[in-house]
Amino acid sequence: MNLRTYPDPVLRHKTGRVETVGPEERAILDKMAETMYLTQGVGLAATQVGLDRQFAVVNVGDGLIKMINPIITKQEGKETQEEGCLSSPGVTVKVTRARRITVQFLNENGEVCELKADGLLARAIQHELDHLAGVNIIDYLHPLKRALATRRLKAARSRQAKKTSRRKKT
Image (cartoon, rainbow, N blue to C red; front, side):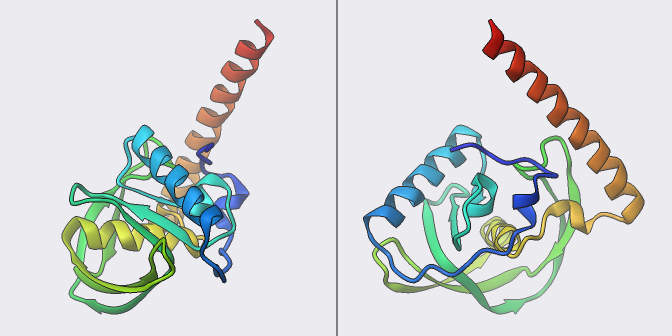
């Protein structure tokens, strides 16, 4: 799967709920997990690979979690930490998030699950759910810093496109 990078408009898209869970959905979740591992991330949302579905995968070291239609039902405490994002390479942002959460979702078999998470797992889940709502870490920056980061990301994206174009010509 191709990873989308900011400011790709698809990253602003609010995803649609998934109505059925079958072989196609399981295959997509598997491909998303593969993409997450290949890019050395700890989470990946469907929008980051251009899909309009409420899918997210997360693995902070305790095993892979595949979520369909995830929703946070409870939040406790707050903490602020630096975050990076596969879709905003080279950008880190201090983000305040809930310290502990409870999230409900369908698993890859269509079963309703509930997970209580804290620490890095809670942060990663909240980060991926932001993506499903069209929110990016860059949105947490002061407007001036956001403009500078956006300019930097556009320049990097342009350089990458030129490299890819040259490779195709040879």
